[in-house]
Image 1 (cartoon, rainbow, N blue to C red):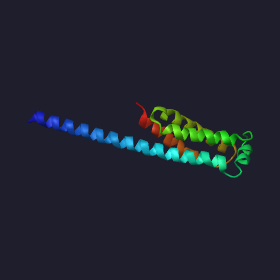
Image 2 (image 1 turned 90 degrees about the vertical axis):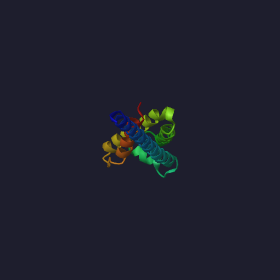
Image 3 (image 1 turned 180 degrees about the vertical axis):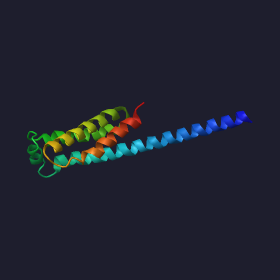
Image 4 (image 1 turned 45 degrees about the vertical axis):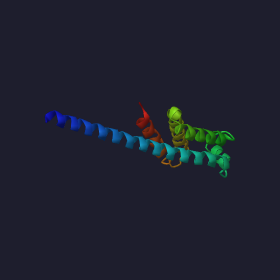
Length: 130
């Protein structure tokens, strides 16, 4: 009787751990997808948004730097949904958000916008690490 009870508890523990692992995996994919959508949209906005060059030059960046920023954001968005390159995409997104935070801080603007994306990128890396 005791052995059957131990085996049943062990089996139920494995099922629970497996279910928990699947839920965390789904959460990781959802977060990756949200970051990808956000950064594709932000990157496209850099290319077609009004006055982007003026905004970036007012922050102290060279002319047309906004095009590079848009490219980097789209690249990060693409890489974060490719499992083999996810860590690079998350790194690009994290670096971009840290840079945005510093840029906004130096220019005396509210710095809260980049923080959620930075946190989500870190969470994705923590979930996906092996």
